[in-house]
Length: 402
Ligand code: FEO
Image (cartoon, rainbow, N blue to C red; front, side, top):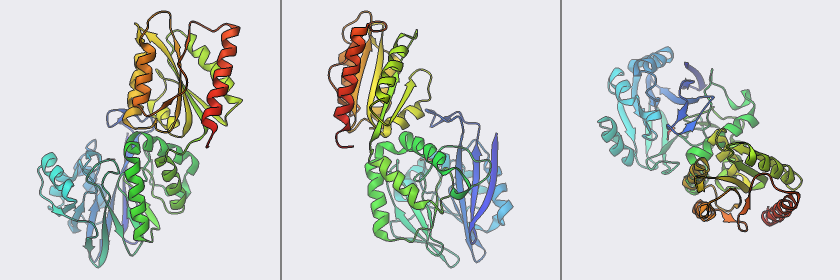
């Protein structure tokens, strides 16, 4: 299912919402059971309009132009701005541009090269601090490379204080209708935004912090944030910004994420025992089955945990492949930094799995707590006592400094 709708978010400022309930994966990697939204915007004045971004090519350019036509006279769209070139926002620009009578397409210099290579279209380059004029209205260009791609700019509509923020300030989840932050369960929405952060933005989080600092120094009077995914923020701009900063800093909470693989249920039993023990010692314990849980949820929980316990079965004398894949994704997103990891290895035979897992976890940025505990089947009472002591010391170690 797809839903194309629109909403006015300011004087002659319109949100064009393209809700994608069809795609099962974002970037062909991340499961998105609740879909995702692609947001484009229109800004008008004096009988001319600027289109900001488009949508992924799961809809036709004709459908986007029809949506624009429900709001304004399409012949009056004189400018298009591409905030970055990833095709979930730029994918319809070339065809839409043609249907709209070839308005001027504006973007950053890096984006210009990429748009030429991707879609063969010529564009006009904007630089940091340039202004884009629509009638008598001014949109200030703020180049903010590496929100997660090198070619990103934001636009700031000065008279209304609207910041068009590309992929930053976004979230997963398709919208049946365009909603403001005051019209949703905001805590639930932040959960969805954290999942989006952990999978799309996390790797470049230090650069995002620099970008936020640059925005702060510009002393813009931002009253509305209009992102490329998710909802438009008005009342909770400060709350969202604080949450984003805490995620970018990988701020730890008194939380442990337990991740286990289990082919026949033995390792799951140990994971359940370990989770019960951890609940005595930390505020929050979440447990994930690496084979069956959504990897987006696992990464999101790892992001703000102080410790992560990996329960890893052996598989043909190597570490359980789904766990190896998970740790590789954690490494890719650099989510292990500053966190303590412990490993329980469940095995009948083999020898090199501990070294394999330790090397992987270190590459992912984790500090490794103690040598891995090796277990066969469900532990004896004596071994259970050993696990209790291990987890007590593990929690004490990472609790320092939280
Ligand atoms: Fe939502 Fe980087 O595209």
